[in-house]
Amino acid sequence: MHNPHPRIVSEYHESVIRGIRIAPYSDYRRGVAALPLALAILAIIIAVGSGILIVSYAQSQAAAAAGRTVQAVQYAEAGARDALMRIARNRDFNNTGGYTIEFVSGGCSGTQEGCVTVTVSTATTPKVIVSTAQVRNTTRALQVDVTFDASSNGEITSVVWTEL
Image: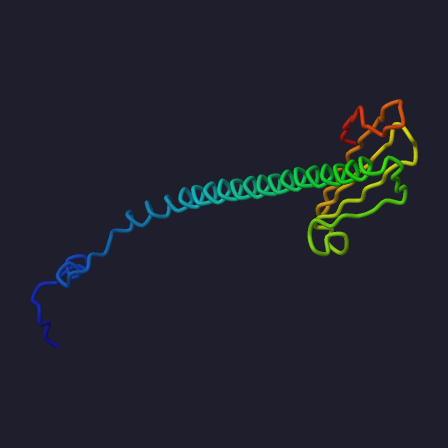
């Protein structure tokens, strides 16, 4: 059989003729050495990204809890002010069993989204109001000591607020 090409062409020259360059074996070894470095960099990027994600999630949870705390204090204060208004209208008002105020529809049942329980002592002076608010799993309570004047006018002379 007759060889159409009189000279023998190496594989490298033949690939150049076809337009495809086959890299020598030493080029492949350099690429393999870079693979562990690329994987290490990828692992570091994933670790840093995961850390940032965890920290941001924890911060968002803390911010939500702080918001619920502020809201619970505001609800407790509103409940105490409601009791103060009732005492101002009727000096003998008391409710040791407590009454509830819903700040959200269905707030005192189920999820406890916004519920306040207010108790008023039977004592004449000082009357003690305890207002306990619950917003989801956050509970805050305020105690208000109400002192009346010595005469029987029923005028409130002193109000002391304490967060419990």
